[in-house]
Amino acid sequence: MKVQDYAKKYLEYCEFRKELDKKTLKAYRIDLRQYFDFLNSDNPQKGEIEDYITNLHKKFKPKTVKRKIAAVKAFYTYLEEEELTPESPFRRIKVKFKEAIMLPRIIPRGEIEELLNCMYAYPKTGRKMDRNHRYWLRDMAIVEMLFATGARVYEVSNIKADCINIDSGLIRIMGKGDKERYIQIGEISVLQLLKRYYDANKEAIKKSGYFFINQRGTRFTEQSIRNMLKKYTRLAGIERNITPHMWRHSFATYLIEEGVDISCVQQILGHSSISTTQIYIHVAAKKQAEILKNLHPRKQMKITGAA
Image (cartoon, rainbow, N blue to C red):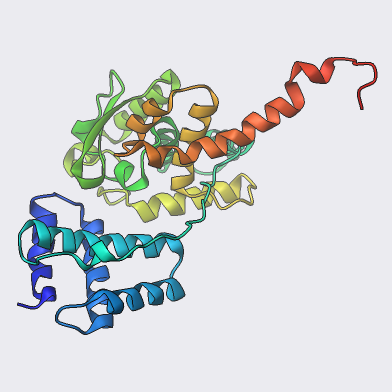
């Protein structure tokens, strides 16, 4: 059999044995197809694969190249383990390149306050709120939950009604690969807001099964959350394009700045590897530099002869 003929079997292995999520499976499928389309070979050898890697570097950013190579290497590792090929050609190929560190974009604390104050003041702006009050409560509850939990936008959008204990504030989050984790809402005012939202939408929530719902009584989608954020950001007069994922970045960065252990932040975010969480240390270091520059006690000392 041709090497590419095993791709379907490998993807089934990833789906049912490794239980990878749909987005990852889609990426693997695309990466393998592009690999075989470029090589157009029944049994690609070292030189051909190196040409493919060079071509990737010409077309994509380092992070994307790294992912695409990893997808193909994982495929060959599977073939070796299943004894479908004698040896992976990647064993004779060294792939090293410097990947630029992309620091996560966070929302300045001041802008978070501005946005939340604008949203809480929204009912007092003179707009007709009788019919829309429960949807304003939903918008507030979503934004507060994004910041309170650091959850991904699709995780928040897909929270089921039975995944939230409205009394204790314990939330069950379903993450990548259907891995579940529990997060505790620690701010009393946020928990009270969730209760107000739930009470105002109780029947529709029970009917749909999802905790956050739209005006049709169905799930409030990821794109709807993005559009809602843009609306209130504009009303608050904030020029920055605030995305749902920026709340996750801000949540992690500010926790680390406050001295929370990185392993705890890793668990809360649902990262499988602590190396993924460590990116936030670089961002928090900016705050550290600011503190040392402006607040270090040496700044207040008068030293004779010092420059």
